[in-house]
Amino acid sequence: MYKKILIGTFSLLAVFAVATISSAQTTSTSTASTKISCVGTAVNTREVAIDAAIITHGQAIQSAYTARAAALQQAYTDTTTAQLKTDVKAAWSAFKASVKSANSAWKTAQKAAWAQFRTASKTCKAPASVSDSANSVSEI
Image (cartoon, rainbow, N blue to C red):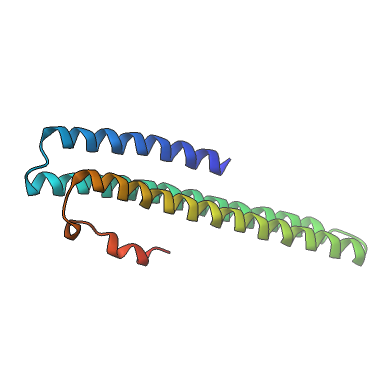
């Protein structure tokens, strides 16, 4: 479900970015201020996408912890040690799988946002000094 939300969000953001950048390109990219504005729009689109992705990631992690808590609570109602071990193992296994999936979806969304930004900012034909791409290593 989270992947569908992410894909839908990024599709809409990509269309918005391309439309906005295209309209900026048709007006005139000859001035420095127009080029800076174009890159600014690409940066804004990237940041909106990253913000949406981190919110989705946080919700997925929270859901994983909630599900783990419920599963462990249920496991400790067992009356045999063997059943308890089985249920605890299943609870932790499901938790690890959920966290791994959430982290993978986050990384995919983050990379997609940066890739879209790079594509959009190239169309601005602005000098590299206008972009903040060098800071991408600061991402979590």
